[in-house]
Image 1 (cartoon, rainbow, N blue to C red):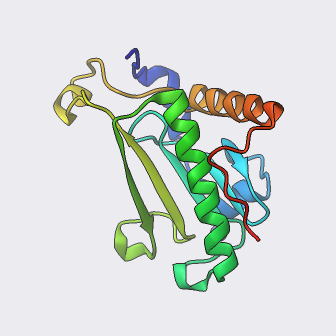
Image 2 (image 1 turned 135 degrees about the horizontal axis):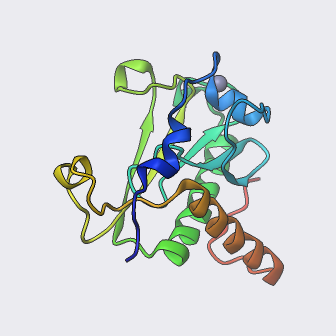
Length: 172
Ligand SMILES: [Zn+2]
């Protein structure tokens, strides 16, 4: 495992956020936000989290501004499930985590800084380093989000080119 966090390198990511819903801005390709989308379906996007908790940390979100999971239709739920499966398969291949934390952020009371419904996909690794080491600026388990995006996009491109359908469940 060779993940390092270079605070200088990602300092530019910590600038002020633009007004408005950041996920809607990403959807619209707004130039004020960094776009790290690695996979899209008709109604959903999967993006590398700009502030990753761990390497490979993704967020999946509906393209329309929905704040409650129950607002999604059954077809949309199935589409999201399919996208989730694809992303897990991709992350297994690119990052080989030991496991995952999967969780929706729904509503600002849940600690979400983004109201737009999103599903966190957080890979977990056997030897994660604690917050003390992180604060001390020692080696920590973080990968440049742009590198994560590059690896995942490359994996998806390769798989699409191969025409493989493994792990993919098409939404109706
Ligand atoms: Zn939104």
